[in-house]
Image 1: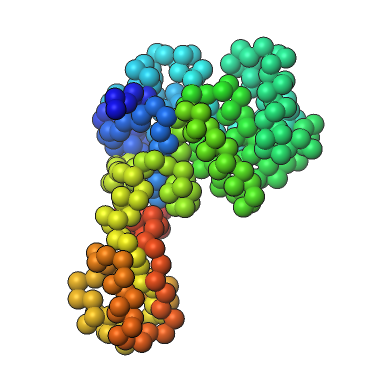
Image 2: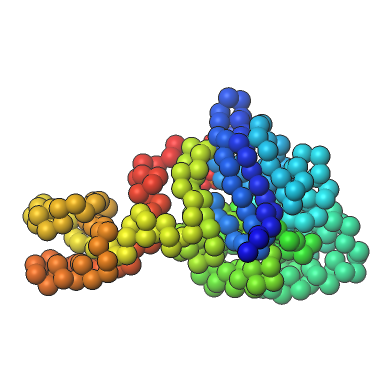
Length: 306
Ligand SMILES: Nc1ncnc2c1ncn2[C@@H]1O[C@H](COP(=O)(O)OP(=O)(O)OP(=O)(O)O)[C@@H](O)[C@H]1O
Ligand SMILES: [Mg+2]
């Protein structure tokens, strides 16, 4: 299948006063796919999103959207893209409804059409009751929902969501996930950052993991899980004896102490741990599926980012 490239970056760089926030990255995003940028705080995800949506010009490298250079094609590119930025940039003095209708002017959406769409989007994010309330009086999660609604006003072909569900309650998170899935079915290309690994695994066809401005891994979520964390993970309550016994039983397995637990990874197929558990008795042993969080922690380490 010949897939159309919608976003392409080559040697993309961004520096801020000597700080290399994005350090020469290459990626391709295909039309209709859902693409995730993952990485610790400060990895360069938001900086990359801002370059894609044209609010922050690259310092070096090439970045094209639908074949157009991001520099010099601002108007064409903006009409294709819907953006939910990480930070709240709603107008605090306007009401919920006005925030949508004023934003619609930016895309030259006719007044009546803009009102109709604003009403629909308020229904979708379940903010109809807050229609005439000014932004200052919304809760954090309500603002987040409004920002997502606003990103959809111009019926974008490309939707950029920078941490769309941070701060949302579980109901709102599922509502947003369902909407993203229905947009995916309509062929919208979704570019998303998230710190929720389950969100990335569920919504993204492909992901990139960034750290210190560089891409350290790329692929389909499940392929990366198989590659870096195997099929299953054994979790046990930590003690020195357990550790000793594990080292004897699984000579080459990677082990990690996480809080009061030991995580054991194996490249053996499913079932290896249950055989081992039958042979020896371990207190509180749990076998679970390997997941994207295992991959993320393996590749980016456990130290907090300053
Ligand atoms: N406008 C700016 N001026 C100076 N430095 C900046 C600016 N924007 C970002 N940075 C720096 O660039 C680096 C990357 O920041 P960025 O916001 O892209 O990270 P991120 O991956 O989105 O992190 P998070 O998960 O915390 O949102 C950080 O070191 C940050 O301090
Ligand atoms: Mg960010």
